[in-house]
Image (tube, rainbow, N blue to C red; front, top):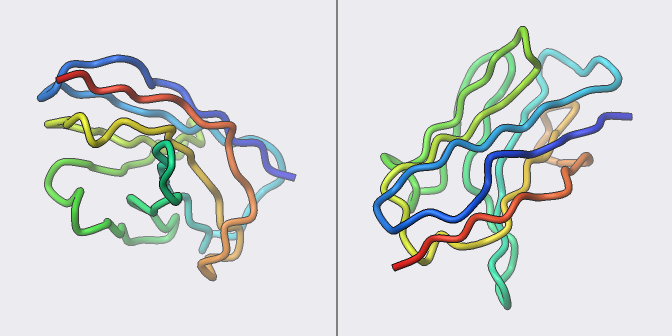
Length: 119
């Protein structure tokens, strides 16, 4: 099993920044694993934001390219999502998820952290 714990959410004014953290623990995953960030706003479907493949490579949703940056700290087994230039429409619950085999199927999910952007 893999446990994921998100942190770093909160209330921020439009134009501000937040850095979300996703700390993983549990069994050792493949070096090809991916960790991704998703969000879900009230009344909307969950959407993919960004992902990082542990061996190499990052992927982004077009609408957040240039504003959001995903990175990792191997020593801390933590993935970050730096979010700049936040907009009210970025308000959502943000989740991290792990794809243990790197196939695109995220089987482990965190509990989510709320991000609220005020105008």
